[in-house]
Every structure is written in structure tokens, then in C-alpha cells.
Image (cartoon, rainbow, N blue to C red; front, side, top):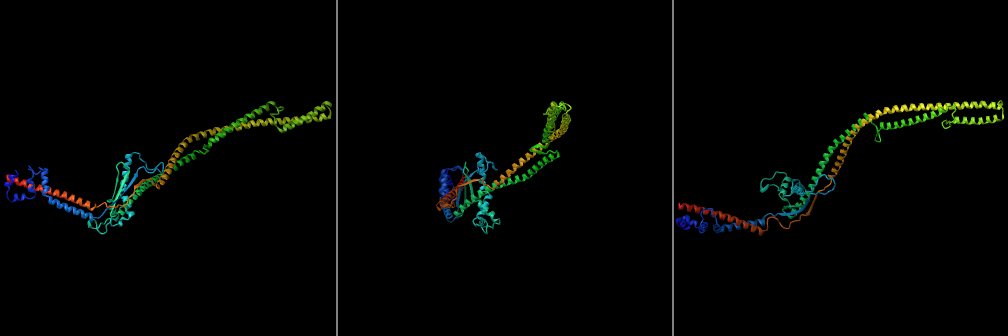
Length: 481
């Protein structure tokens, strides 16, 4: 087929096709269509484009070497940070709950890692290092690629530039995060990484403090309502107590205490009445001439009986020796009669007094019994009111307990705001890099340029070869037709 095409295609086009890639294509193995590509055909394309490949490799290699020599150097520094999601256990009942599940902890570390590269953290770095005055982050006068000046706020410009320079990556299955940043000089790169870590720790602490502050404020706002509830409940208790006259002493109602005392007085009155009646019966049964000295206890009666006994002894002694008409006996007899009358009068007085004591004891018992019956109604009413009072008191106690719990928790949360419990440790601090991270060394840049130029050269050679084969096939089809 190649010979037929060669003989029929003599002329300018055929002669020209013999040059370059066309001759190589015809020297290759036969192919039936444009897309019938094999190794021999590709080698023909490469052989035909060797000069182009060499030129592009040389050009790209030279460009790579030039970029490596004159390109702006970038230095990268990094640090290794351990973010422990189980924060320090400063208080037993902490505000923030801690998860013991590893998947949840890994998600929490991922969230913290996002905080590390967030706008709040990087804004702290911009402010701490005064990056708004650094020409590396805020170019004065002109915008990107020498265009118009950026009219945004310098802090926003510096924040955008810093966000492109800082990266954070967590090692798989661990809480270790690698933080990296690059700058135009080694010292600044290390300073950026160190500032990012410090800002991250400060941001976490501030986040916890803000959360505790919000909780403390919410609790404080709720405390005022709880305090009003306690006051209202206690006012109900006192108002009900005053309205029902439920005065208490030592935890017991005054009416109950009074009833207890009154019952004791009734028992005493009953005992006194029994004793008075017993004494009166003894005296009344003996009469005015009774000789029971135990029942008749009186100093006057004792003296009269003593005088009577003495005088009676004198009279009896005189009667033994003297006659009944003797003046001595006649003088003693009226005296004896007078003493007998006095003894009888005194005995009658004692009996009357005992009877009076009985009546007085009866009156006292009746009075106390009446008071006791009246007090029983009062105590019954007070006990019924005491049931409602206890219900009101329980409500007041419950409101007080809730208020005290919120008050204690508010104080604890307010103090929690002052404590930093985040557990973030720098296990590998940043150090100043000794070599630049970009651009690569001149040797590597040259090799990369040569390889890239060769790739582009091969692509161009294949494209040109494919185009010439297309023209050759088109010419062959036209000649055959």
C-alpha cells in the first residue's frame, strides 16, 4: 500500500510528505485508520519531533533553573500539638460534659483543629504580630499583580494572607495535630507558628470562659425569678399563719402547748378535789370532838388541847384530894369548859375550812374543764389549719431548695469562668527552618524543567505527527478515489 501511494502521489505534496514526520509515518508499519496507533507509529512521531522535544526541554530546564535562582524564597516551620479532648478535671461537677467515646473525642479534636485555623484565632495572630504593618502581608500602594490598590481594611487583607499560609492536619487515629506556616524568612515562619499555637490556646480558653459567662448570666437572670418565688411562698406561709393565729414555739403551736398545760392543770385540780373531799369526809365523820390529830392539823387546836390536857390533869389531881365544892375545883371547872368550847369551835372552823376547800376545788375543776373543752375546739381548728400550713411550708421549702441550688451553681459557674481547663500541649515547638521550602534547589528545578519540557515536547510531537498522518491518509484516500 505504501508503494502504490508513493507512485501515485508523485509531485510537490508527495515530496514534501517525505520530509519530517510524513516520511517517518510511511516508513512505519501500515495502519488502516487515523486511530490505529501502535508503538512503531508513536516512535516515529517521537523521532520526527526530537528537535522540538530537545528545544522545549532546554527552554523549560532553563526557566526552572532561573526560577530557582531568582524566585522569592519561602520558609516553612511547623509544630506538633497534642489536643486532649479530656480537659483537666478541676471541679468534680464541671460545666462541660466529657465524652468517653473515642469517635466523639476525635470529632471534638477535629472541631478544635478548625478553631486553630479559624478567623478568630488568626485575628489574634494578626493583632499580636502587627501584621497589618508588615509589607509581606499588606502590600502598600498596589493590589495583587500590580493592579489597583486594595481598599479593604488592612486587618482583613492581613487575615486573608495569613489564612493562605497556615495549615493544620491531624494524624489519623490520634489527637496529634501538625501546624505549619510559611513566610519569607525563617524567623518569621517560626514566629507565625508559635503565635498561632498561643492564639489557639487563648481562643479555647476564651471560648470556655465565654460559655461559663453566658451560663452564669442565664443562671443569674433566673435567680431573680426564683428569689421572688421564694419570697412569695414565704409570704403565703406567714399570711396564713397570722390569719389563723397559728403561732408556734419550738416547732409546736402555742394552742397545742396551751392545751397540754391546761390538761395538766385539770389533772392537778382533780387531784386537789379528791384530796379535799377525802380530808373533809374524815373530819366530818369524827365531828367536832374528833381526836384524829392527823386530820386536824392546826397550831391553835394543838395549843388548846395542850392547855386543856394540863388543866384537866390539875383538875383530876385536885378532885382526888378535894371535895366537889372546893373552891379550887370550882375555879378549874369553868376553865375546862371554856377550853372545851374553844376546842370545839376550832374543830368546827377546820371542818368548815375543809368544806370550803372542797367547794373551791370543785369550782376550779369546773373552770378548768370548761376551758379545756373550749380549747379543744381551738386546737382542732388549728390542727386542720396546720395541714394547709404544712402544704404551704413544703412549697416554700421546695422553692427555697431550688433557689439555693441555683445560687450555689451560679457561684460555682462564675468561678469556673476564671479557670482554664483546656488540655493543649505543644510536644514539638517550632524551630527556624535551615532550608527554604520553595522554590526547590537549582538542580531539582532544572531536572523538573527538563522533564516538564520533555512532556510538552512529546505532546507537541504526537500532535504534529497525528496531524500529518491525517493529511497523508486524506491525500491517499483522494488519490485512490
